[in-house]
Image (cartoon, rainbow, N blue to C red; front, side):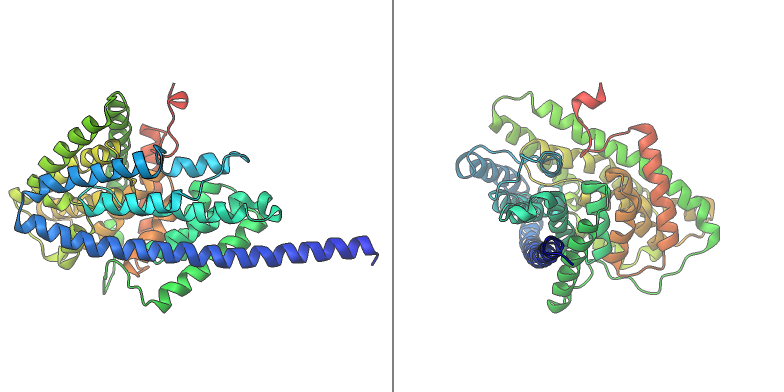
Amino acid sequence: MNNTTKIKKNYRFIKVQKLVIVSILIGFLSAFLGVILKNTTEYYEEIFFHKTVVNPIFLVVFPVFGLSIIYFLREYVFKKKENKGIKEVFESTNSPSNNLPSYKIPSHFINGLLTVVFGGSTGIEVSTVVASATIGSVAQRKQNVFRQYKTELICAGVAAGITALFSSPIAGLLFSLEVISRKVTRAFILTNLIAVSIAFGLLHLLDEKPLFAVHNMTWHLRAIPYFILLGIIAGINSVYLTRCVLFFKAQFSKIKVHYYKIIFGSVILSVSLFVFPQLYGEGYHAIKTIFINPNGMVLSLSMVLTFIGILVLKPIVTSATLASGGDGGVFAPSLFIGAFLGLLLALILNQYFNANVIPINFVIIGMAAVLSASIHAPFTALFLVCGLTNDYTLFLPILVVCLISKYTAKLIYPFTVYSYSPSLAK
């Protein structure tokens, strides 16, 4: 072996070593950030939501107060630099010169927390994704050897962040692949596998529990036609969510005085929360209530009207939250819509068509189906929901329904809130 070959071999070895070390750091920091944001949000959201139950006047105060603080922070602390959500990550991975600045870490962390805690009807997932992607982006700028692995290291941060939120390393890997990178390289496999392994290890050390606990799951072949129906309806609902978000953002962008946006958004939020408190924040508290005993629920007219109202209003209040300056995305809203849609469909099928389906199955599959259709990532949705429930009994029906819902949505409207741009829509 000549000297040139030895030098090249040593250089490759050193480069791999450095990639391993930086992937470990990215995985730990991104997961730690995700766990802190998740637990802090859950803790304070519960406290603030309880205050609105005791004194409903807070349903008026909290939204306008939260959106005003976020506006103040963006205007004076973060120097009028707007948060574009996951589109920022796309712009960074698609351009060698466009990097995610380090201020995105505290900006998305704080704004995402404030949005949800004060009643904004969205989730912290996108805030976590952008903040953790920024960790990867900052890391790749530290040494020249990492420049060519910009996308891989950003994806490693994203994958670790998603793993921390949903207790599913496979969902983290698949989200960074299906939504962000869309290509597999050896460096992608190395960096992302290490990052999600570190993230999942941290979850075990901290004894983080799945968000929704389910037991004694089973399903029957006779339910397949009803699962297919759920997939089609979920695809239609996801398009409604996507179009709502895009419409509200387009309309609110025409308002030149930002505080008018805050007032309009707060009015929509406050009125909706007065009618349906389930819409407050991420909505996971409402999903947990229907997880208690969905199989024992009996359909009534008031329940049907409540569920329909929630399904109609959720995309509107989510859109108003985001368009008026809130920080978040469609992850939590999709899971929320899917849970209520699935339960409503199951109860209707049982009461009026003697279908004898298992409602909790429809809750879980509905969550995955709407998420799959909303972000066009069926495999991410599959493993994410299985991770949320820590149960893989419904793996096959979830996979089928996720594919059906995705392609139903694409057939109706080819864009997601991440992929849409005015130039593409023309």
